[in-house]
Length: 203
Image 1: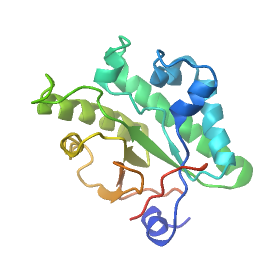
Image 2: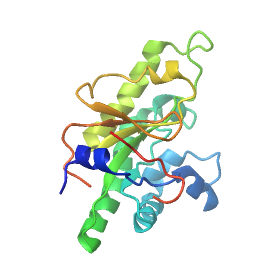
Image 3: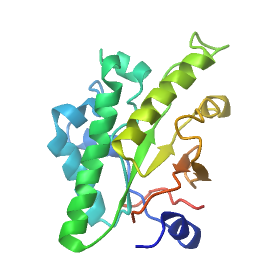
């Protein structure tokens, strides 16, 4: 299998589409915690991953867009950051492994990281150190669970993006996506190889 970095340098890589949009279309109301579905309805999340793969996706984003302590706290789930993120990676990996077994295809798992959902200083009450800690906690969970890359997306401002910690992924190289305000962090290892509207990544 070609190296991950070589593929990104030589061609367009197709990522999957939005997870939340599909969940809403399937009747999951917006007052639910979509990230918690990794634990409460894993079959639903797995089925969506598999459908994206059948549509041609080469990168599966984990269902962890809002799986940081601040957003999860709205649903009394702040203590399950690691569990929810790990489950998100495992479900995407399971779908990718099924593809490899049945069709000899390859797909990568991208750990999805969205905004914290709170205002940072000086406009809000959340300090920059708190923001770094929250991002670090989520990134550590995604990395420990085996995500091939991290996809940081939909950040409303550059100061917020700057709170991405350099640890525990300080050795990772960075590659920006063509999607607005999205960044992919690519680890140096990665021995692994979407529907319309998906972002394309370039090294």
